[in-house]
Each structure stands twice: as C-alpha cells, then as structure tokens.
Length: 78
Image (tube, rainbow, N blue to C red; front, side, top):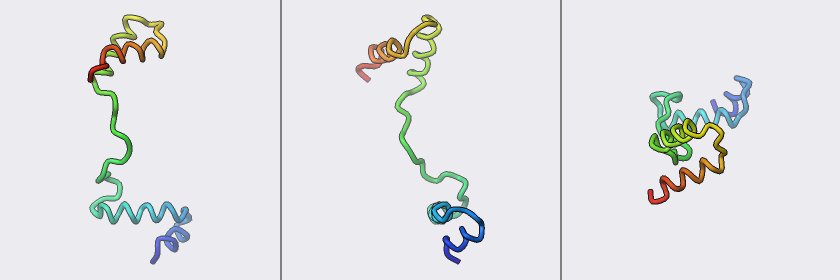
C-alpha cells in the first residue's frame, strides 16, 4: 500500500503519511522516538539563564534592551 493510499484510508493529509514513512525508514525501531535531533541548537547555556535570572531579580523593572546589553557585556568574549 502506498503512503497516499494509507493517508486516504486514515483520513489524514498525504504529506503526513509521507513524513511518517520517512520517519519509519530513518528509525524503524520507533517512529515516535526522535533518532535525529532536528532544528537549531540552543544558543544560550545554563550560565546565560542564571545570569538573566540574577539580573532580573536584582532589577525587577529591567527592559529587554537592558537585559540584552547586560548579556552582551557579560558574554562578549565567549
């Protein structure tokens, strides 16, 4: 049975069926387990997160621009 025929029978969009087939072909042991990480990697680390939280706790009325400037000063060389 083709993916398009299965999609029609299941009442789903054919592209969804094709995506499921390609996921199965990439990782036959489990299509719901992500075998390959997709998307962008995180840019900010736990150190960034801690810096943001500490700065906001010290300055509750900080703006996004001020927070960005603070992060740039702290991590400019990294």
